[in-house]
Image 1 (spheres, rainbow, N blue to C red):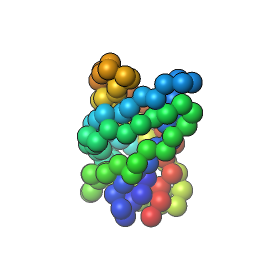
Image 2: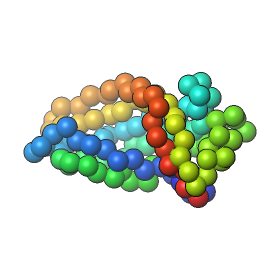
Image 3: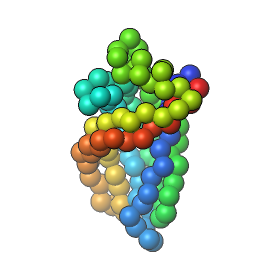
Length: 113
């Protein structure tokens, strides 16, 4: 997570060996301590996830400034923090499109300026 530019990047690992999948939309919220919202990502431009690992584009983050979760992010500047996340993710493989519900716990986030 990049605090001052209000963006985040992620490393995605594709489960496929020969197929490129596409992320078509993201509507996600990150939480500190399981309940304190840190920020949200709403992104609607598709990007490719080829086989192997891929770095996402810089995704815009709307911080929940003033909340306990945002204070935890500021205090972790230059280090890392464990966050939870919940998201609706749009995916496309060929002509097949689907929206997936994702919930993750204990995701390691490096906090950068």
